[in-house]
Length: 71
Image 1: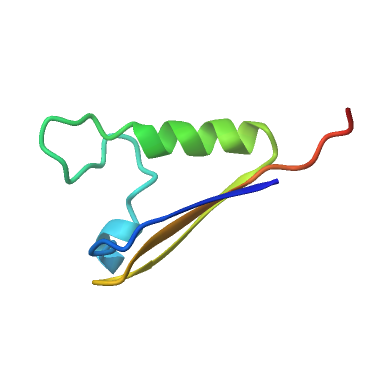
Image 2: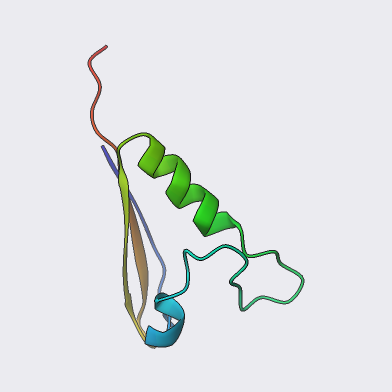
């Protein structure tokens, strides 16, 4: 299964892109910077992966891939 979320915002700089999954990294005032690090850990615990594609001034796409399970 793949879930994809995209925006057409300003994108993520290369310098920030290297840090977005680090706990407590944030560029937002008043935020804790734990969301993406926790999301990545949960996805990886389920043998999945998170992929981020970004282009400055064009936007960002985040893909969450999880393995299919038999029901």
